[in-house]
Length: 436
Ligand code: PMP
Image (cartoon, rainbow, N blue to C red; front, side):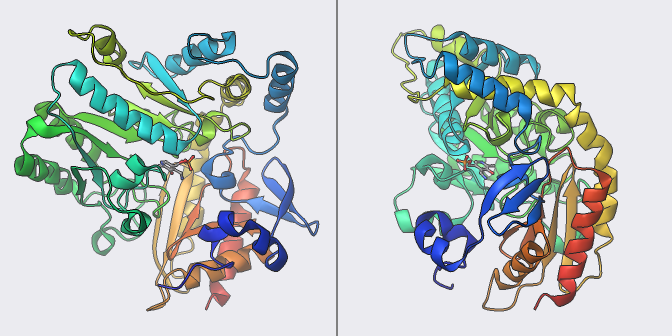
């Protein structure tokens, strides 16, 4: 493993000042689907920022809503108090998906994950299932950087430095089977049996000790891993059978990325809780929300012994500026029909990506909705080197891509035109010709 350095895209937040001197890759403006760099070049945003600017950049209705709000009420506590937009936004969000009548506001995906895990544990207590304290995640799952998220997350490198993690966590195997499913379009056919691994874990510990299972419906940050057909439904069945809550982490899949409002709609499987962030405000003001299925909140209110409390919440939960941005964002998604647009563009996107089959080092191409990945054969002993070379070359040619390991991940804003998709595909194709 190479030591993190200024070239490592994952290390940049910590080395911002050094990076400034040595790697002057900076965005200073953005508009629509483009960034402008410090040296005045336009770069097409192939990643929606960090999978978050689903409606593109610097959208007027969102900016105006935030400006109006900051002139009126900059902040109000939502503990013991409230402000109108927090109630309005909560109500509008719950209208977006049937069967989820409460949301809990957070400020990021990581906070949404920790919040969902805590709600799950407290709910089990509230219904008299206090022995259920174990949590189950999945290999190659990414759930942010809080201690809950790295414990249930399936990336060993993200947690090994910080030892001891949450007690009592198991991980399902990931579902990515390159040998069987390379170049699959949409959901692969194989791998259904892997959902049954949940039965194996349940048998190891006894169902009465397990509180919840958390999975990303489509694993994003670890390389766009799409579940096999029927996988999520099977997890739901097994959870139901054993009284285990099912949590979807929809931080990436939420707000239209798959061409449906949420992955729960796309796959037709209802979790008990699902996390969101990123696209909820189009990233203009940081925010997240945990959606809770009907009955979860009531269980706290009706808990028999009155001792079950969910002591949880953030200073900025339901921040007025975030709620203003969020309301304008979901209006914009609706007014411009962006979720439907994503569904319409998805086949074109799919064909474009798959035309790169046969490119240098390409060993797999995957896609679902408006997200895709191109997996490259790594250089032995130098994980990430090849994809990072592609990242730099694409940037020079005016395209922002995201890389994770040796995988190029793509998730353009849902306002892209076909000509932008052509540009992404052509540029990646060009880059692959020279990538070392
Ligand atoms: N969950 C998932 C599925 C994510 O993709 C991410 C971020 N990429 C997070 C949680 C964490 O979100 P944040 O970085 O906003 O804390």
